[in-house]
Length: 523
Image (cartoon, rainbow, N blue to C red; front, side, top):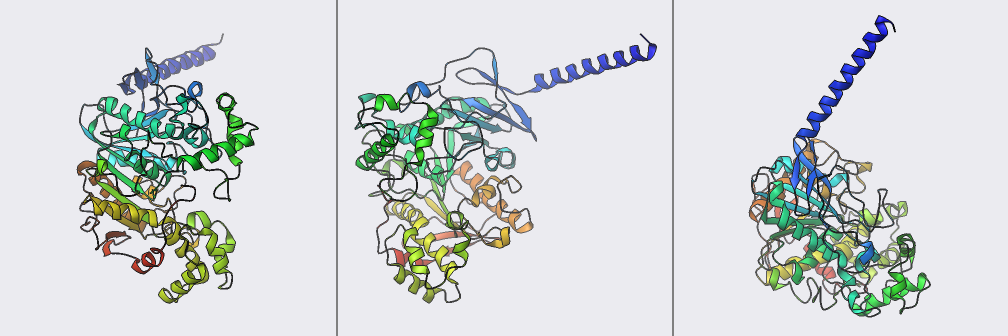
């Protein structure tokens, strides 16, 4: 062997030893937290300790359609370095599994300090999504506010909300709400374990967007969740009613028929491969008569004894402070992807408008009133404004009104600041507020841009949510004085580059649709 080669090998060996030493030091510095089931090892991201894929429940496959069991304890230290699988679903690129009860934690330190805890429940109706979307990354919010952030996966669609109580045995009594019971289990995990992650189990804020907000308001009406939520913030989480048990049974029966099963074959449904159940989610909905079958929370008389906000706000949750938010142009998220909706004529408008309204008001009457209120609007602008006011907005109003009637603290916001991308055509669309609240303007999926205006709005929204998590009151130096929502004043924080308090914003639109009851079809 030549002297040169020996030198090269010696250098390589030294480099290898140095590399091993570096890896050893990195492993030694990796944060390790102790949970009730065992120890977990996380990582460090921009000074924030991150634990991904922490198990809070056992594999749900052996107990499909039943409440989950706690995780089996483990010995040694488990790596918590990668997100856990999401619930089986139709719209996702990441791994899915019925073994999906995992959560993620971002914390400034494992130091015993009692920081506010913010638990985020993802959107995606009750059908899709997970806690690992880049928009929900907790580094920036944890760092900005010295708080602990938690995101969570749970059972969705047929796995979490298929009501089989009337078709199967007594062990299926809770089947219409096991996805919500997963969330209760996650909140119990927080209560039992978050102190080890530098959080305060006595100061837990649940916040969520769209279906996530809807699940949170449902938890507020569930006896099993009492004492686990101290503050609540919903972002376009408009649920007022759950599904009734008769309609839920009709949906379960239609789903089983697609699989070639009769209503008396729930035992077979329990054991079919998960992929077959996912494929059957394309079953046409038997009640809405449009789109695929829908599974969501069920008023079953047990887990969920009442509707979330009907006939009133639950008095058992009246002490819980609440933020209720919506975006000015909600339906541009659902309807803005069809280019035809930007070229509607006045003649076409009534026929196009009718099927998109939840509140049953004559489309011609709606169009005529909007043309009076906003004579400069194009037909497309009327279409998006009216579908928002007649479909997405009413649930938020009802929640705020019902809270006001029982003197429960609530603050309402309306996000007017819109996306500068795509020529601005989507404006303040449904889900646009997520990146602003998490201060994740440059995350994949964000359409906020990173300009000064977006930065200013993100500062306001994230600081208000952090103040709320700390104290139960969203007021802070970043925003104007935010008054609680009361009747008949209806004070609302209208959020823009320069935000302002407005009493009863869009009053005329609210009054136009107030003549019709708001009930989700299939309730």
